[in-house]
Length: 400
Image (cartoon, rainbow, N blue to C red; front, side):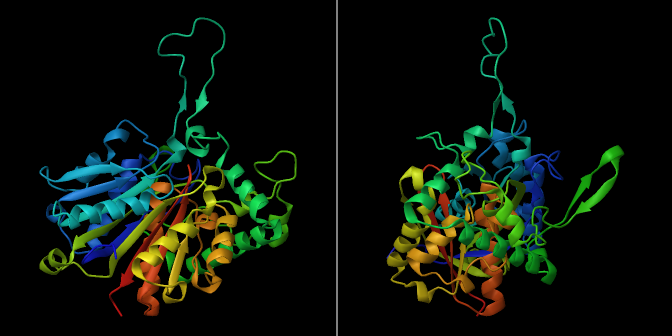
């Protein structure tokens, strides 16, 4: 049996998620992350001086401090100069990897109290001009969208949405089933917003508007709970221009900006510092799958994780499986027997959006809150990873 001993998770927070090119496009990513980190510390009744390590997950460095973001965030959040910081990247599992890496630091004795944080501001990803550095000789030259580096498979150069279409074709999923999942995601997100469930994990952030005006950004910007199944059915395929595709903007994850953080500590450090112990990180698994069907990744990742802990699907009280595309969730549901009534009850990537550096953290916060509310014991957080992998983590509620 693999896993960690007495690694606790506590007091997470995140920013609202901003729609692509909208409310957060002028806010530096490090500003968003510092905001999430400070709120996480506040909720844990933890002083920044008592944190010895920060792990920041990010797939797209932006702004002048992008390559040094982890250290910049740590110091700006008030952590001591003597503390350490590092950045991690594991495609769509980057937020979860930040948690795992922080736990590994603690398990190896190199850290005692850490912050796992992550985020993206894809709205700030620049266009690139490769020819400019050495001089374009004559005539026009091309600007390349930096996001193209993120959304294309490194092996086939297909867009990630094309890999979802590959899954549809290979495994026989219908457009109707995918649209129905997208509709369900939007309805669940809308209900979670109305009930205040999502507000519990969100730390509203003050933004500067036109002419210096200030306003509080407090709610996720992407959800469309008013959408109808008829509207979703009318959307054109987003990736197959021959009109024969099934993957649309309505059954795919949204591009959103935001950051999230939570406290990761040894049990002894948590007890010494009075950090509220909410959950334990028990284990994790990462597996490879063919890149052209990367959306199949959660299935073998969850299977391996369950085998490592000698558990079954029926033993898991709640699943968060990232809605990169609805076909990912349909596949996990069919292949694993994951019940829909125990999966993504508060929306997911389709309704809330998917900034990879923050997504795993957001999903973990959601799972922690769900277990605390329901008295469940185990939750699995899983996602597919662009380039052909799947990742899954297992947490245990300690507030039963």
